[in-house]
Length: 245
Image 1 (tube, rainbow, N blue to C red):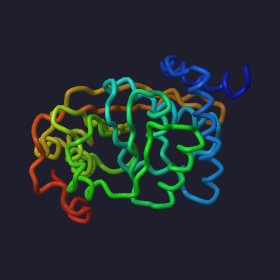
Image 2: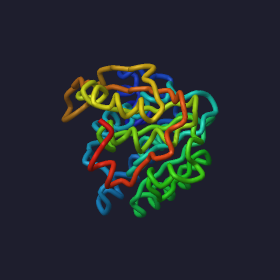
Image 3: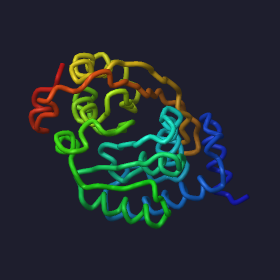
C-alpha cells in the first residue's frame, strides 16, 4: 500500500468515511489534490496546502454531505471555487450529475480541465452567478443544491433555494457558528419556500501540524416545500445590502 493511500484511509476512516476508502476514490482524490495544490501557486484556490490538513479539512469535510444526497440526483454546487466540494461528490457518487458554478472564469476553467483529467463524466463546470441562474431556465430544477464556505446563511439561502426544485433539498455546510447562522436565517429560508428537516452535527477530526484536532461542523438540510416567490433572487448587491432577516 502506497504511503498516500494509507494516509487517506487513516484520515477518512477516523471521520466515519470508510465507505469512500476504495482505491479508485482515493486515487482520484489524491490526483485532484496534487493538481489543486500546484494550481494554487498561481491562482488562489485554498489557504490549506499541507497534505494531511487538506485531506481532513477539505476532502473529509466535503464527503460528509455525500450520504445526504438521494440516488440519481441532479446536484448543484454554488460558489465552487477550486471545485473541492463538487469534485468530492462527483468522485464518490457516480450515480449523480454534478454542476459546479462560480463567477470567476479562471477557477471554472481549472475545474473543467481537472474534470477531464480525472475522467469525471458526471461533472460539469459553468461560469455564472447563482442569482442569474435562479432567474433563468434552471430555476427550481435541481434535486440537491449545496454550498460550502460561500456566504452567511441568509445570503446563501437567497442564492441557493431558488434553484432547488419543489421537494428537493438545500444543504448548507457550516462551521462552529452554524447554529447562530441557522437562527439568523429562519425568515430567509421560510420566505423562500423551505423548511429545516435535519441537522447533521459532528466533530471533524482534523490533522494539522501532525496533531489531531476536533472541529465543530454542521450540515443543515432544508426541504423545498413550496415555490420560491418570483421576486427572489434579487441582484447580488441587494442581497448583501439587505438580506432577508
